[in-house]
Image (cartoon, rainbow, N blue to C red; front, top):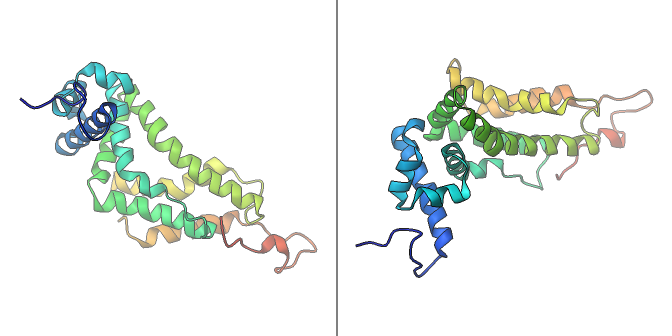
Length: 217
């Protein structure tokens, strides 16, 4: 008889780490094979070969397990190259998100999660906590840094700017009215940043320090 994950310590990774990994893997497999409705606590426990009590030790609901398993697969799309310009970093992030949704099963899964969140408060809360909020915080911090360097106007609405940059990707994912092509990322970022750039003040020329873009982040 095989050892149930999380019940008896073995060699290799600590028991708790192995159990967490098995639970997240089980949630991912269920999500891919059956969609959001297939990911129940009972199904996760059965596939991961742990008790439901073990799952509740780390996650308050199935929604939180689902979103953490999803986020782990997409963590790379939030990477920031500190040697790149603001425009390059934002373009890379939008491009990564676009390709994730277009070229993998993450796109249909995200659409399912967004749809399910309309009727399930737990999924809505987990989607905000584990997906939207972390991604928006990264985008907002990049824009704030641009303001501090004098690249962007200090009076901009940062929350609205983050929406302007990333929301069209979700819009196209959900409605499918236009393709999620690679050129979309550069277009969105360029057009939004063009509207957020600082403008020369009286007495300031195009070569003043305030107008010089920063090389790094």
